Length: 182
Image (cartoon, rainbow, N blue to C red; front, side, top):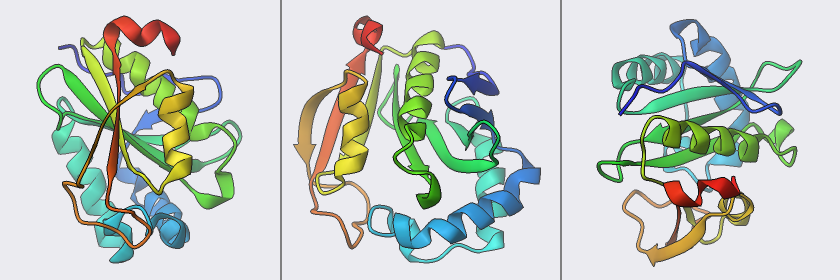
């Protein structure tokens, strides 16, 4: 597989590889989003410190080449969220993850970021891309639906559950031959 680009532009948003200098902006965005994220992301329920932001950015640098984590930047705005292509679904595939600051939801930023990640995943040689979300997270489930993914499974969560979750992971998949839909 090729290595993903450091920056991706989808028109609606620009995705930029996390840099150490971003730790303060990441801390601020996550801190302001904790109440919004905690029902869906167990890590958010435990709080988020400046040390966590520094550690996260350092981890993204270490994993670059297998996993790809990006800041989501909207035109004329600073950081509005984060998204990732994670190699945890096995060889040839990426799982996508995303979150958007609550002041910037319902503007298409997460969908635009996910579309850019899908295109990049297939450009670097992936044969499939998956999005996994809890059944109760209706907003997150709209993104794979809009991008032409198909639901392929419902299963018990592999990670710690959060307070808003129903405890059923919905798995969506898009194959490289399906990517013309994005």
